[in-house]
Image 1: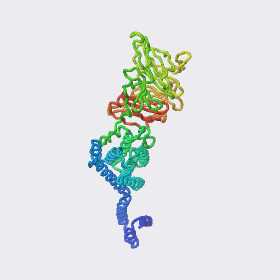
Image 2: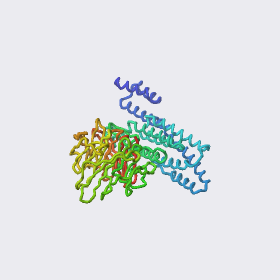
Image 3: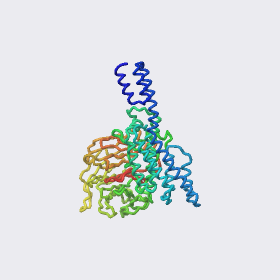
Image 4: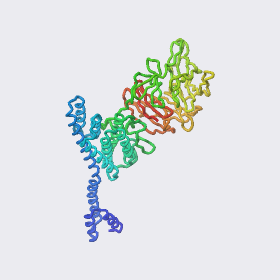
Length: 562
């Protein structure tokens, strides 16, 4: 046997079990071992050690699972006994709730369903001083601690570390039944730690982009692991929305980053969602955070600095502010023209100080051209300015578009002539002072809308159904961002001023998506918004101070508050 092989064997002997060390040492000493025999002995011993190491390394994971089950059993039994002694319809509902969650479901979300059922039951009961309740809480604490140790054991497979994260999360929620705010905060930290694991990043990179990372994990197992991560995020997000005072915002949720891309583990990537659905995984649709007490014209709605929606109520002729609580208040009556045969709001926008800009269009008779006026209201609905705009529409039915930049400059797009007017209101002369009048080929009447963005200087962002265009403030075209074919057609565009990303809502046969592009045109991520009736008609809108929302005529989802 060569000196190299002998040296490797001696090194291997040093890390093997005593029995193997004795056996190998005896063979080496006698000099009667071949290379093949040596390899067989080492492989056999490594297999033995692996089985022992797996059992040893999974000890904390198995213990955490036992403690979690113990706590749930004790708490469930106590609650059922307590409720059975109360002969009320309400208590019967609680019993049914807990029993249904504990009815033998062994799927990956069974523990989560059971936990939510228990929280619903416990929330109305004052039992925190009961010894059995304290015993259950102690079991949950031990489950969390053991699961934390298991998660941080890098010798475990990624499947086991994901399982440890699941137990860790559920144990924390059950341990702090009286304080869901704290539970959500710490569980989001757990998810961030899971998302930061290199194997998790590589797993999603392979599933979404095809990836270049070699892996011993099968395609089926990789999808199962990714489904588990997706489910954990989805359930915690839903739990937080139901049980916390300040529900989480979609853009504030921890993402999984690989390379320059990021994946949203709740609403991310339509292609991957199709894989999840094909695998039988329920995908959460995006629903509104709050609904309006009146239908609104969502196409002209805006979001203010508080994350409230400002829009014109249908049928009322009033401009209203809609709060997260569902309450609303009238900001102002919609501007009217006394002698006009028709008059309506044509466009709206809002600036960093929550001043509301409203363009109305009107004409005195059907055979006359349409005129336009600009109104500016402060945050309390007081009218600050009113002035006519320097153009008319002869026959076009195209809408006028408006955008306000960070310096208060007003840009108004005359789609009939494809002119972009940039200027300010001159209060003394009661007029709109035009500083620039640009004719831009990139701003034709086919454009969906346009916005201002602060990307190394002020840029004009416009879009048609197939692409997004970045122009300088002087109208020079800088870049065309073509929407990937699989994402369909553009419906609306906004700027995320906090992250300096271009947000594009698109539609395709399978539903709606929200794409996020960098200022260089790189697709950073995409959110799968679903195919509900609500999301179908929602438009994306944003505020200069950070809030981003999706708004339709019946409600809104706040994606980001600041």
